[in-house]
Image (cartoon, rainbow, N blue to C red; front, side, top):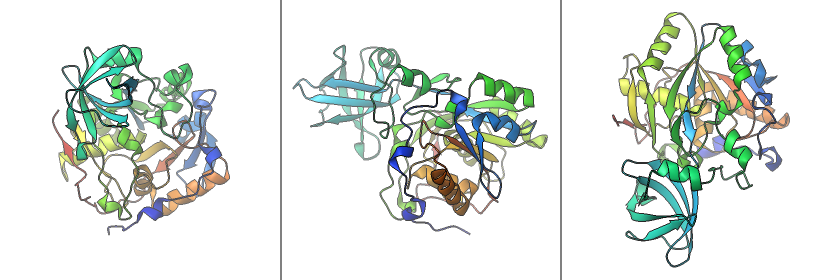
Length: 366
């Protein structure tokens, strides 16, 4: 049966000092809350290989965080802050702009006192994004002049440490403006131990957008409008998942972004049809009652109160179970959010599918 929740069901009191401002000294030195049993178990992330079985498949998000934050000024001298949301063909981008007064189409904005970008107009849901044209390859300009787009709850300016640590060791395809943070805990030692254990790996790409931090402003969560992100699930990963299933192994998603990509591709394939390769956009909104078709286990960080990601993990592992795990994490002083600790979750018994008002749609190919 569909489950009816309000925004308050996903709230909890989090002491500010538990919000991690810096990463652990070593990636795999973070803590891991094992939530796969009836009672929580406190472990180290380096224990992960022993919690998986030979024949299991870990699926990562291989997106690469770009230095998407730019500081600049308008011709009037007013300051502008840009967060590039998506890089388009033809040296164009979509970006969030913060300014005392929004620049009009045709305006030129000077970024980093180094290059000019033309404002072409507004775009996106509710015209929340600005369409800009850069004078050269945006990825090169951002790499040279941009800043690491740290989340709003990290209070320091970006540093060289952030440039290396707010990035996974296997980041490959540039385009994200937020890191797939569950994967930040993996280092070469853990990857080698997983391989020795007989755990296979595969990858998807989902370019995480700034909308991942967008607050839910409606009490009836079914009315929330989800942001859209580009993703790709390739043929090699589809084949790896099919082989894992055939051999009786489990599919373990590393992070909510990986889970969203896999379940979006499954939804696009249609009920009763096998997972197929897919490239496009998704605004899938996963809430309790969602019918998971691909992922058996989830590795994830601890999420913001009342966020869509709290709803996702509650849908995956059961609302009461997840809230109990969060109470334990707070009592045990786990570190929260992007630079914080991780947890391992087992999928709850599957329930009938629930369609969101926007349909949790995927679109493409793109």
